[in-house]
Amino acid sequence: MQIHGLGARLGPRAAATLVAALFVGLLLGPAAAQDYPTRPIRMLIGFAPGASTDIFARVIATELQQVLGQPVVVESRSGANGTIATAELVRSPPDGHTLMMAISSHVTNGLYYRSLPYDPVRDVTPIVEVARAGWVLLASNNFPANTIQELITLARTRPGEIDYASAGESSPPHLFAVLLSQAAGIRMTHVPYRGSSQAIVDVVAGRVPLLFGTIALAREQIAGRQVKALGIATLERSRILPTVPTIAEQGLPGFQADIWFGILGPPNMPAPIVVRLETAILEILRRPDIHRRFEEQDADIVNGGHTAFRRTLEEEQRRWTRIFHDADLARQ
Image (tube, rainbow, N blue to C red; front, top):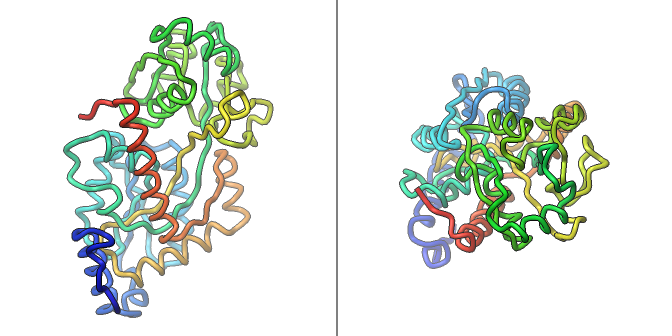
């Protein structure tokens, strides 16, 4: 095993982490994967039950326990935009018995919160990038704009006067609105809520005009004409809302604001256990019935192994670092 120059390429801490993981993997060898798991596995989620994170975690957990022969129990550790669950994950033994279903805010939390006790890329073990899900920009029925271009025109004539709701500071709805403002060259005012449930209630009531929401959770309000859908935030139109144009095709080419879902482990997990989990989860995700379960939530399965998932984390960190800097987002 050649590691000459590793510190220069990765940095001393990252190099030490990688060497430690490789060393443990060599010591344990195939026996680690053969004996694993020896007891029930915990699947942490950082949000309340019932959301897409919880739904997808339970789909994977139910199938994974059949493959591994041990119960896989989904446990909610909601709060602080998922950071409570992540802090518990990184403190856990790296034996594969504690995992987490994370979403995109896992990376952006590291840019927003100053005092996190972990680095969202360096201090976790990526296992599988599971899926990506689209979002839609919603508007109250009494809001005068019906398209993205009408919104942009209105916002340019009334800079800072148009409000948008979110599920809280640095939540996906907040950051997607920041991304839209940057792309369109407009300025709007953020109104944070403690979760999306109350935010969507106030958008329906017309108290706040705009909100980015998941397509899966917003489709009932859209179908019931309680809110308007101004644009889909992915590059392609939604299967669930095929008549709603994307934001990209409404004058902002390349605009994309979706979230990924992925399975993470604690730092320094032995390579044989990572490969065992990766192989099992990827096999589950290839099944047509599992594809249908994800499509019901307007999510596309990614099938990204641990190497590709690490690249996603690193690319997301670079991308959002630029966005945070350009938007001068305050940090806590």
